Image (cartoon, rainbow over all chains, first blue to last red; front, side, top):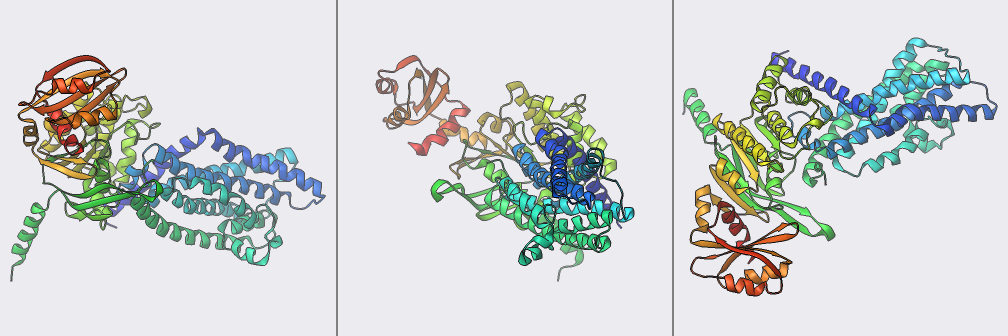
Length: 266
Length: 335
């Protein structure tokens, strides 16, 4: 590898680390985001547990806690990515960042990493909350697989959020789209209801969503139902597909944003 | 058949002959309300030669910032061509970005919650400046813009002038050959603006080519080798500051301090015989009318007759200034 390429890789990693640190600082200081990332999963978990107890079923409380954590994680990822682009536009930083010689992907990647990092925190807090308040046993059937499934799922959610945030580069008002995508992904990926209860054609869409496989991987590893390893593989594969689509879309969206003049604050 | 050496010489001569900025018949339109098309830039052609500083002057909405944004590669032209050191900003934006430094005006465009040095480190990474070079270069730049000692303070605590100086440091981080300055002295106090102009002048002394957009004639006069004046997206004049000043030769300016003047009054004054242009400035409670006319015609009586019924506070006559030359140029075709 040439020295120039090494420098380039090094400075890309440096940018990611610095921008991630900055983004974390920003997110932690945003009250709405703190509510979404930290409190919302706990509220979801509490509601889910009360409903679960009311149903009279006694199996797999861990699945309930994980689904609630993932719902909160998806909400915060979607809002976090959209917020970051909107904030850059408001601070009139989107133009200088796009005007740098690096790809828009590198510029937006730290947002996904930062929201994902808080997602891991949300997941751990939800599991702890459920264990303390609802006496959920913290027993994992396949601990190794579970600890692989956590980062894979978090990255999958982050990448899906980044894919959608690409549209926020183009449309200043696209943040409203975030609300539109929040609930359907809960439904389609099996966080809210089992996928088997959805109509057949809708289930096909579910299997194209990486979070669906993330849910399967986490619950599979934790409770032991289904093949967690296969789900982790599918989750990774779909995340790679999202990455490719994001790279293509961002290039296209950057072109369209330059064409329509929407990078600037309108 | 030319030898390799001759080929290289031809290539070198070509690169020397390539202007720093070349804009050819550039047009940019925007869709306004009810689908109405507005020309932000209309057929602009301009050259900035290497080592030259060219000012792009014009009032708000003249098309200066749109031109700067096209050169910054954050806006695409509707038609025409623009290139930086021969790199087309549409077809080859990445290369154009590497050789261009962008310095924006105003106090936004920086990470407010980060320190000055963190802002610069972030952009140093983004521009791929090798680690070993980052800290010494940032230190030199902070020293140059007079921010050493404040580098660990958060940008949100900076004054507008300090933020502007940080913008300059950021724009020069990757040592660009071409610099685009978009209204850098906007909203800065006179002392700060003077320091800023000294900084900008140093850049050309260092061999950089600069395109400066501004609506301050005196700024362009002090800094630029040539200026182009834009109005409503069209270039209406181009030349050295001295040649533009000559436009006001043989003119006199009647200044009337008044209150209650409306656009209809300005329109009637512009139509008076002998009047070349009229400028109106608001000062809270009062207004100042600058009425330009030829020395051969005294328009005082006619102007005061048009303002009958309004509260006229003061009337005086003076020689035109550089600012007047610009105002005269901008308002000429509006008569």
